[in-house]
Length: 286
Image (tube, rainbow, N blue to C red; front, side, top):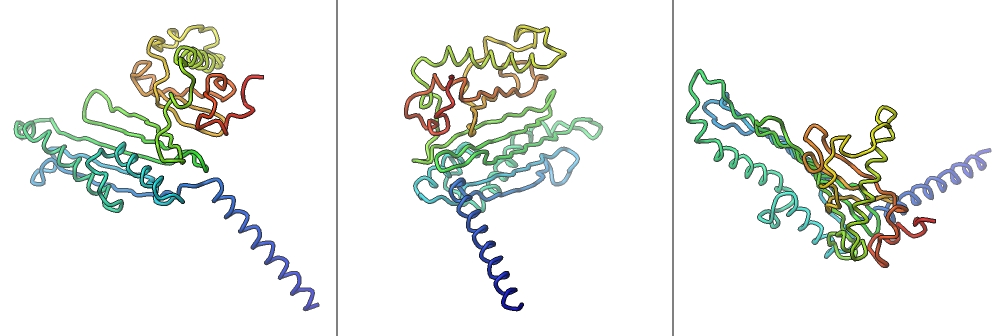
């Protein structure tokens, strides 16, 4: 009986080890860029002596690449992402002090930009200079070939309304360079891709039963002449998604617009040997 128990325990141990090994190997085969999250929350006061004059809230939450099998690729990823997030002046800043250095820069800019106005505020004034900047940046898609990255900004500088923007970058893990539309699509793709984007957007909007009587983008309050490939897209296994920020193709109140393009819609426009070809094979129109 004891011998049977030992056999069962040994078999169970083997199963657990094999299962764990399977998931580790699977993870390594599908995720090639390791990211680490860095975050910071700070409040900068326009005047330390009089906090009621105003303040700026700074919230930074960033996924940052910290490991990849190829050090050159990792270096290119880091440099490019830091530049897109913080500007070229921060590319030599150590990773563990990046957010603190950037927050200090934003705080100084806030104080410098508002110092003269603050001097004009009287004791009975209702004016204050409350601002907010929120940055979220995260990895969206990662396999052996492509690393997609999202940067989300929220700005409130006390105007009529806050503003926001979503920016996307897709990296070729052969060398860590950013994948552009011209690398993906054949020459002269713009006109037909524009038509596909407009058609897909209109189809998505019309899918709602309450709006199925509307037949043009203008009826949905979009600006058709501004809708075109804008370079702001992210890559996934089955799709390319184009993202248009507020004010880009419609009034502010419409917010952000996403247009999801399955590969079968655009495969005929894609170059042979393009960086996404391995995702698109077999997904063209039949």
